[in-house]
Amino acid sequence: MRIELRGKSFAGRAVLGPIRLTIGRGRRVAVLGPSGIGKSTLLRIVAGLDRDFDGQAEGDDRLAVVFQEPTLLPWRRALDNITIAAGCDAAVGRDLMAQVGLAGREDQFPRQMSLGQQRRLALARAFAARPDILLMDEPFASLDPETATRMIRLAAGLLDRSGAGLFLVTHDAGEPARLEAQVFRLSGHPAVLQRDRD
Amino acid sequence: MPGLLSLTAMLALWFVLALLSDNPRAVPGPGAVWSELVAIAASGELWFHAGMTLFRVLASFVLAMAVGLALGLWMGRSRAADHWLNPGLVIALNLPALVVIVLAYIWIGLNEVAAIVAVALNKIPVVTVMLREGARALRPDLDDMAQAFRMTAPARLRHVVLPQLAPHVAAAARAGISLIWKIVLVVELLGRSNGVGFKIYLLFSSFDVAGVLAWALAFVAVMLAIDLAVLRPWEARANRWRRDAD
Image (cartoon, rainbow over all chains, first blue to last red; front, side, top):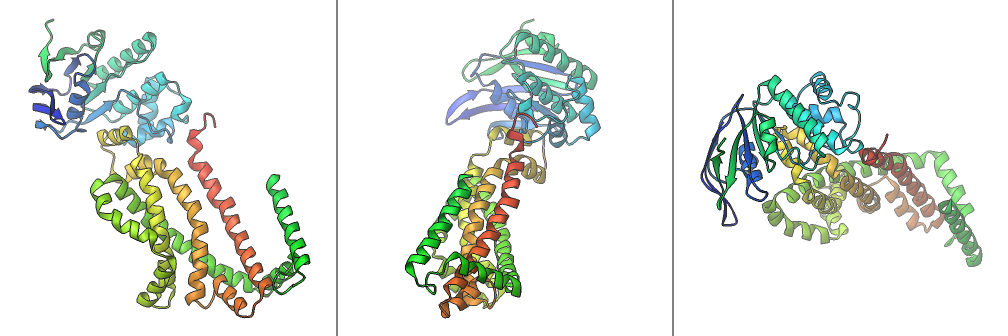
C-alpha cells in the first residue's frame, strides 16, 4: 500500500510533515524515533484508524495490528480472542497458539495469563488474520529482555513463514536489525521520515 | 442469616401491631393474610391474575430494555445524537407515569398494547440514561482493535460492546423490573379487567385489607424469585471473566 501524507495536525499543531511510504508483502520497514514524535500517529494512519489527515492512503492489502498493549477481549477465552478478531477457524487459532508457545492455554481468560503471554497471544491473533502487512506499535516495550528476545524471534519466524510485510514502530534501535527491517527515522517539527544511513 | 432474622422481626412487629390496634378489618394480622393467600391460591384466582400481571411485566420489561439499550448506545456513542435527543429524554424522565398511562389509553385504546406500551414508555428513559453512561465509558483501545481487524458490526456488538455494557444492563434490569411491576399495577387498576392491580382495585372498593396484603405479598414473592433465580445468576455469569481462576 502507498501512503502519501502532506501533513497531520492535532488542534492546529502540525505533528507530521510530508511523508511518502510504500509497504507491501515481503517488505519490512521500521520507523525509529523518540517517544512523542508521532510514530504511533503515523501507524494509526497506515492502519486506517485515523482518517483525519491531509493526504492519501491507498491499497487493499490485508492488515493486522499488534498494539502497544495486548488489547485482548478480557471476557473471551484465549482461543476465542483469536478466532473472533481474526475471523479464522479454531484449528488455525490452535496452530498459531502452539507456534507462539501457548498450547494448552486455549481456555484461559486473558487476566489469567502473564503480560508476556498476553503479548504472544496478540501476536498469534495478528498472524491468524493472514495479513499482507503486519503493523506493530512498540510491541516489545515493557517486556524483560529475555521475553522481548523470545517475542522478536517468534515474530521473525512467523514473518518468514507467512511472507507478510512489516511496518514496525519503535524507539529501540536494536529491534529493526533483528527483524531484518529497513530503518527510517522520524524527526523534526513537524516530523518527517529519513532513510537511515546504513 | 441477618436477613432471615430481620424478616422474622418484621413479622413479629406486624403481629404485635395487629394485636394492639385490635381492628382486624383495617390491620389484619399475619394469620388472616396467610389464610386469604391460601384461599386465593386454592381457588386458582392467584395463578390467573398473577400470571397476567407477570406477562405484562415481562413484555414491557423486554420492550423497555431493548429500546433503552439501543437509545443509550446511540446517545453514548454519538455526540450529535446526544445533543438532539437529550431535551426529549429530560422531558420523558420527568413526565409523571400517570400522564403517560392515561394518554396511552386515550390514544391507543383500552387494550393490552396500550398497557404494555405505557409501562415501557415509563421505563425507557431510565434505561437509556443508565446505558448512555456505560456507552460513554467504552474502551477506545478495543474499538481500535475491532476496527483494525475489520470485525463486522454484529461481531463488534456481541463480543466487544455488549460485554462492556453488561454490568450497566444488569443494573438497569434489576432496578427496572421492580419499578415496572409497580407501574403495571397502576395500569391494571386504570384500564384492565384482570391482573393483580385489578384485584387490588376490587378489594379496595370493599375495604378488604387482608386481601390487598395477600395479593401484594404474593407478587412480591414472585418478583423476588425472578431476581434470585434469573437476574442474579445471569449477572454472576456475565462477570465470570473477572475472576482469576475458574
